[in-house]
Length: 419
Image (cartoon, rainbow, N blue to C red; front, side, top):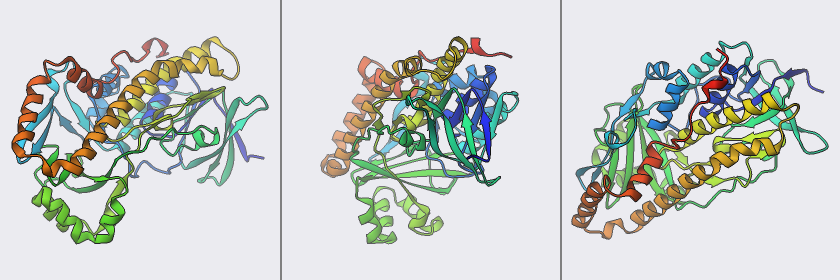
């Protein structure tokens, strides 16, 4: 038996971008919502750093944009790469049809804390940090009625009872696993190695280097850190580590000697690097009676194009609309038939983005395998052709806008707000 029972209309498991946004929107709409987070504090390592113009628009519709812009961040108005030593612009936000022609690069902790503070101004909101969800409550019909958890601060077992449980607990989702839903992961031909350097340790006037010896990406985060990514083939990283840190530095130096020197000066070996498994995935189903999955719990995005955060926030905005309507016009546990409207509205966009990411991953793997054999003049000529075609080609423009602007049909249902 649990030590205590908490009752809410909706339980949101996971205080990442999707979970925090959804909890805030629900609380502002008069819904009793419990936000359950495994970590004790926000000061932990996060994967996603990019917030595209589409998300910035949604932050504005939520009335939190001014507070978000007050947080430490870097503003990006164009995407540029050093291609064989020549700077090439691959994305100019001013050419996009948006009132927010910029992206933000920032760490997640301060943003999540900001969203929780906004949600906490509403009486129906309760935040439960240091609380690990261990299982779902499922009745004889298979409907989800709540969740079982352990509050580590109080050393108590907690039963959360609700009309709907939202699994927003990431790519390794406990909620998804306990519901018996397969994540639908695809194999990826590449992986990404992340590490941080002090801001100014290397020239970051471009977002990275593409050269015959490999691919590097880097961007500022606005708080004195520079995030760096080194692209590797899938299953290659273990061999790189076995060869030693010096061999790793030589590989990086072949692409950018300045970056290799900065790594040597500021990193204390491989323990300060993190391998990110790029493998994307789309679960077969995102809903059950009393259950909704969103963000990486429903569809795991790769880091290509920085799509994880935007997809999760869009999910939260749509889920807010679906959940408030369902809670208002139905009684008891929310049915799969009702909740499936969320999946119907989101799946086409998600599958399109994941497909583009997989195609880009294949192209990057091709470059890692064969880039050294391609003449520099051909690469530069292709880049110049792309630069000319991008504003004129509907296909290229559509792909770019899918990544930069997101699903423009998604908008915050402000009519649900009670304030």
